[in-house]
Length: 169
Length: 268
Image (cartoon, rainbow over all chains, first blue to last red; front, side):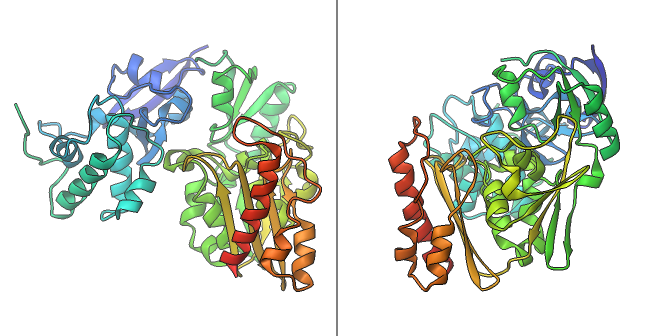
């Protein structure tokens, strides 16, 4: 039997009715239409489905949507400023070639967002530990680490997540 | 991999949670962090007919210091334990173990009480609880950790009984917990923990049997002045860990001895 669900997704309040067994990742993809959050391993390991729940990184395949009642959810679609452009982490992943196929990238971006919120100047080891819940099968992680380092520097230098220059296009 | 359908209800107090579990008639399960339960449900290895979500039971989310004891509410997340200045000061081994559970995403959600109640032989808090003689407090009784972990995934908890708290002794002295694992976020294939307490050593082993093991032979040898190297030779005595894809029984026994020695050397 569907239950009412009230929460905020990327700054927008929503009210839906969902089955208890609906996982948060499926709610985001199928009910909200936010397909940037990917289903990867389906077994709580790869981190491709990482979103922020009240600012904390969570694997959305391992949480029921109803558990997000009253929470603020941020998905990869909520990273970039509303007026266009990219978040500094997105810019850095682009410029440092922090992806190849890109399937894992939304999860890495969200995990890295949480990492930098807690530690604005992480060492390479801290970046590795902060992203240990995310798997990438293309890059070997070197460029991902480089991208997080570059984004951290840009954000410390004052690049506002909401005022990043448009890249490409 | 979609879980089977279930009835969902939310509790906001211990009394309400117990009442909802009772109404589930033995088929209801507690949903806390969900990081063991939900994967099992997705694989349909678990198909509870009802879940009682206790994430709103705020009275179980706390860390308190009291008369030389560290009291941790069952709903406390691993990430909260890691960040707790009180835990770092009075029982740093607990904070270090919490920081090695899973990965940051798992630590955001998983709870101390959930790990204890799940009683996985690869769980880390159960070993700490057994080696430090911790107490598990439920809505109706107090259970010594050594009596709580009866077998793999098996505890004396009644179907409608809720783990509310775990009480550890404060132990600020030398300590170390070493996990052997192939991937950083994995469960330990074997882990060894050591903690100095009341002038002696407590030694525990993870995943060397269906329940956490207290390596009493090692503790006794150390009390008689044996070196870490000599004492750790007894770490696997009497143990018959199971073999699986990750390690044979004999290799687990080897790891128990080596990790115990390293933990003692690094703690001292």
